[in-house]
Image 1 (cartoon, helix red, strand yellow):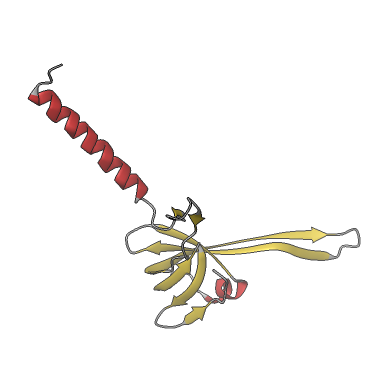
Image 2 (image 1 turned 30 degrees about the vertical axis):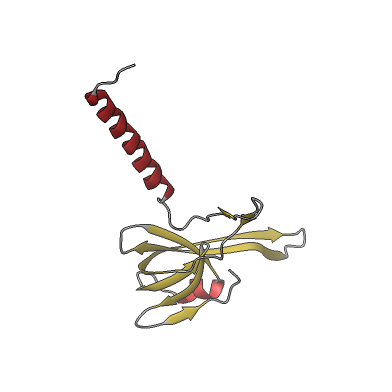
Length: 137
């Protein structure tokens, strides 16, 4: 079977394009969790969490709470969740879980340096304030 030079070049170009697409897709999101296989017996090893620091602009606050009222009209709140939404320098959007205290203290449209890990706020610093969360990562 004989392949012409043009056909071989086109085939090589197609293979290189597929490889490039695979590399781009696998490197797409630096914030997703990666699990790497260890060389010992095929066991999976979870790497230590990565901590990121980026310049960001706080654009939105999201909170959700579940209020429960019993037959005596006593109310209780369960499942509180607080989230801050930041716009990054590169135009990306970042959603981070945080404590109620951080949610209340960080004002809208505050620009600063945000440090986070696994989708959780660790620290936010601006010219006017510095807020640190003490969470297990």
